[in-house]
Length: 231
View: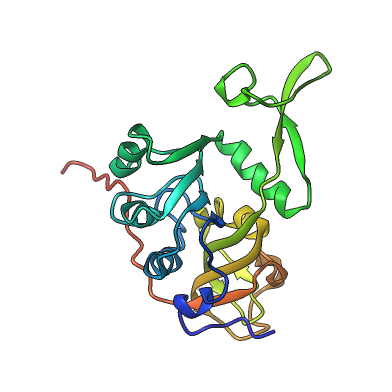
């Protein structure tokens, strides 16, 4: 299967539809699929449900899709750093499903592994547990969380080979690996595509079987909160 496409728009052609669910990798602005997000904005796909650790910042990352009102619902664990997110949520324009960070990661991983649900103690006794099944194991209460399966996963990696085997750089692994596995279709953007066979098999973080389409591009790599030491 030919997986390498010339650009983000071409890689997303035929897989976008209004009302779809998208799992997006990244943490803050680290390891986010910025080229694919921009292409979704340009495509005008709307009424989206997006599962991501957060929603970027006002003018970058998923914040771009909030600006254009293309996102209907966010499934997130952190929603700071984005004033437009806050405005839309407080005004009732944006639906928000809060997930504890580890729960969101496990929901994606479970969905990718074909596991429909799992029990966790995280969130028990809080608003997170409202409406969810509660079961007791060894004298402790746990809530049932559903595995998350998305119509599309968009992720960003450091290197790839033409088969889609991915290597992430340092903390950019974050949510990218579980997000990639839970998508029925996974599109990845990378900084470099290297020849087949040149990646050390022991250093591949995501096997190419999970990746359906692939692009190489230039990335901005913004810093979310620049902190400098006083002179």
